[in-house]
Length: 152
Image 1 (tube, rainbow, N blue to C red):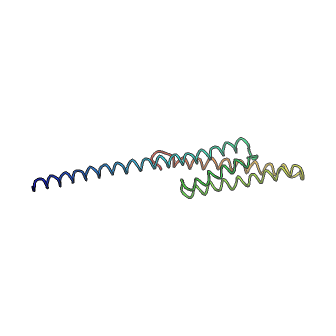
Image 2 (cartoon, rainbow, N blue to C red; image 1 turned 60 degrees about the vertical axis):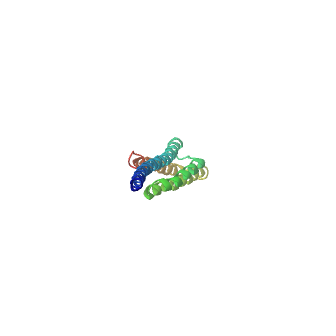
Image 3 (cartoon, helix red, strand yellow; image 1 turned 90 degrees about the vertical axis):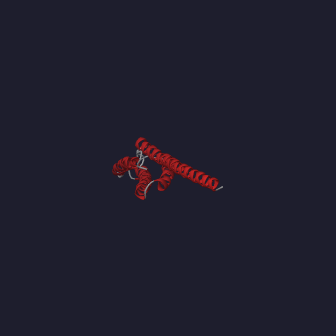
């Protein structure tokens, strides 16, 4: 009878060890799945920034309000998937894109009401747009650091 109890105890210990090994593997699989999900979400943010940058490059200072608000959604998501400094840079890009739209509107109004002032406003808005576009590239490069395999 004592031998049967010992055998049952050994089998129970073996089952417990196997369960622990299985649980450890499940944890690794869950961590990997979370990393894949995080990577996909970060890629969506990068894609949104890239779309905005392309729109900015194509349209120049005449960016559309619709694209700016689409970019605002991307900026909000970046707060969840990237460290605060990256989010702050994304938010800064969005705020400056709103200023660029205001610059463009001022230039449009000046062409009609103050034609002599329009050329200087045009230069200011073009310089502002180029700086914004260049900063989009810089933030893109920073985001890519978080997309490198093993860097997440």
